[in-house]
Amino acid sequence: MLITDNSPVSLKPIQQSVHVTFNYDVHFTHGLFELDNPLLAEVIAGYGEITPKKVLAVVDAGLLQYHQDLVNKISNYAHFYEDIINLIEQPIIIPGGELVKNEPKFVEQIHKLIDAGGICRHSYVLAIGGGAFLDMVGYAAATAHRGIRLLRVPTTVLAQNDSGVGVKNGINAFAKKNFLGTFAPPYAVLNDLNFLTSLDDRDWRAGIAEAVKVALIKDADFFHFIRIYAEELASRDMKLMERVIYRCAQLHLEHIANSGDPFEKGSSRPLDFGHWAAHKLEQITNYKLRHGEAVAIGIALDITYSYLIGLLSQSEWQNILVTLKKLGFILYLPALTEQLEQPNHPYNLFRGLTEFREHLGGKLTITLLQGIGQGIEVNQVDLSIYKQAVYMLKDWV
Image 1 (cartoon, rainbow, N blue to C red):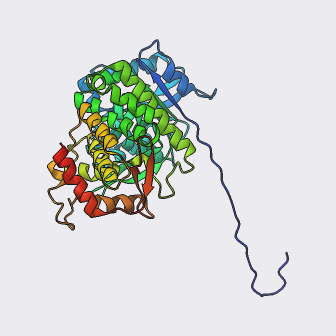
Image 2 (image 1 turned 180 degrees about the vertical axis):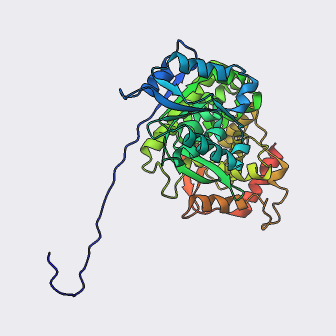
């Protein structure tokens, strides 16, 4: 169209739709860094690309207490597969746990190492550690060069069956969990089940809470499996734990792939069942409570509310609470009730509902249970009944 005068021209919007496909595998193995295990090298070799590839290895410091030779093993592995892996320097040791998500300096440290080592978008950041550690390293990798390939090696139950297999990365800010973060799928996840043998009992148990969560909202048979073997799982039966981790990871990945909202653009977030209270409890206890321990309490609270409003039968409610107790979870803490009568107190439990909605955006959406294996979403809750649920849970315990 030619413009021959100064009359206004109507410019129609240019409509564009971009379809992006993400593919990543979650592997299960034993002895990932043993020289006769080629899995890591094969993953880095990828699709016949030019090798060797630059790799920055970042290790959770907490692992070294139980795996003193881990750094040497990683270095020896890279040397053995030097035609594929170019480790730019000795693996970097960084603290793990929630502390690492509260201190921005650790993200900056990784960014500096990426810059100094010439790590590019065809290179790899290899992150080896627990869930909070992987969240932080993933955030650093996703924000350098707009995204560097991330290889996650989760080393806890919770990371192997939940946080480490998903697409989220983040750190805490402004006293809020995961306030800064990205949706960036990993290049691959490598679950080395041998790492689980060195977990203390709290970390072993904590990860089972996420399996209970996803079973309750998606798979009644899976919950019944956990219920039947709860005492054996609490007693650290490794074969049973491997089955729990695999099924839990499978259910999480199915939801991410098939929910129609992998990056949580809408208000629905069923995988955060039990989490609005859990996130607040972590903050109230200054993160002394493990994430999985807080999730167990959050689940107990939300199923009690579901029971009080007639969604769950008494027998279902009791079965879930008994299962959580057999797994070894403490289901009541004074932090639940200490500021409950002061609605404006920053440590009032119900402020977690507001913070949950703010983090999610849109309208409040809470997942409750209308039966084992059947989650249901609600957009409003009755705080007086939730308060009753808190005290009812306290009395039950």
